[in-house]
Amino acid sequence: MPTYKYSAKTLESKMVRGVMEANDEETVRRLLRQDQTFLLKIREVENVKKPYKLKAMELSDFSRQLASMLGSGIPVIRAMRILEERDVKPGLKKVYEVILREIQRGNTLSEAMELSGGSFPELMINIFRAGEASGQLENSARKMADHYEKEHKLKEKVRAAMTYPIILFGVTVVVVLLVFTLILPQFFELFDGIELPALTKFMLFLSNSLETYGLFYLIGLLLILALGAFVLSIPKVKLQADKVKLKIPKIGHLLKIIYTARFARNLSSLYSSGLPMINALNIGGDTVGNTYIRDQFIMVVESVRNGEALSAAIEKIDGFDAKLVATIYIGEESGRLDEMLENVSDAYDYEAEMATARMVTYIEPVMIIIMAFMVGSIILSVMMPIMTLYQNIG
Image (cartoon, rainbow, N blue to C red):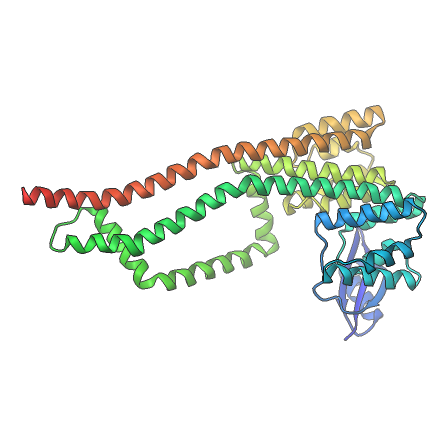
C-alpha cells in the first residue's frame, strides 16, 4: 500500500501535516474530510518509516553552513550537494540525500525539508518557506542557526545542572542494595536466638526479600515503568499530567519559565520572518512542549482572529509567566513586538538557567538527608542487637 505525505487545513484554518497509508489519493482526501480536514497538497513518498530527526545542534549547524554558502553566492542546490558530500553521520547524510533529490525534482528547499519524513521541525520549515517567499532565505537560515544554538545551550545547562542529583541518587540506590544483599546478611547471622528490635526485624525482612526475590522486584519495576509510559502516552492522561507538572512547587515555576522562553523565542522567530500572527501562534503553540498549554492556543487563536489584542489573548493561558504578557503589551504599543519578544526570550533563558541552579540547591540537601536517614537506619538496626548482646554478656 503506498504512503502519502499530505498538508491540509482544519475548519479553524490550522495547518495539519502528516503521513498516511492508503490505496490512492482520493482515499486520503475522503478520510481527511471525515475528520473535517481538507486536503491542500499530497505527494507519494518512499521510505518514511523512522526518519532521522535532527537534534538542536545539528539543526543549528545545518542552518549556519547553509547561510554561509548562500551569502557567498552559492545556489541552494549546490549548497545541498556540498553538505551531502561532507563526512557526516549516516542518518544525517541520508536526510541530505533526500533533500537534494527533492530539490532536483523542482521542489523548493522548504518543500524538500517537509518531504524528508519529519527530520526537520515545523517551525524551521515555515521560517525557511517565509524566507524563500521574501527572498531572505540567507537571513532566515542565520536566524534558525542562532535559535537552535540557544535552545541547545539551554538544554545542556539544564542537563548539566541535573547531573549531580541524578548521580547522587544512583549512588544511593547502589549502596543501599549492596548493604542489604552483601553486608547485612553477615551481621544478621550473629543475632540468631536473640529477640530483635522491630527496626532490625524490618531490615532483616528487606534483606532476605531482596536476596530471594530481587530479580522479580527488578522485573516488576520494569513492568511498572513500561505501564507508566503507556498510560502517559494516552492523550487525556498526558494532558492532566502536563497540567499537574505546572502545579508542583519549585519545579512548576521552573517549567513555566522554560515553556515561556521557548514560546517567546519561537514566536519571535516566526513573526519576524513575516508569517501572519495566526499562523505564528498555531506553530508556536505546537512547539511549547506541553499539551495542556498547547490546547489553550485554540482559544488564543480564535481571540486574535476576532480582533482581540495578542497580550490580552495570551493572558488567558494558564502556564506562562506573567511577565510575558506585559512585554507583549509594550511591544504592541511601541510597534516593536518582534524585538521585545527576542529580548524577553533571552531574559527567560537566563532566568531558566538560574531557576534550574536554585532547584538543584534544593534537591542536593534533600538527597543527602534521605541518604543519611537510610544509612543511619541501617546502622541503628545493627547496633541495637549488638548492644543487647553486650548487656546479656554483662
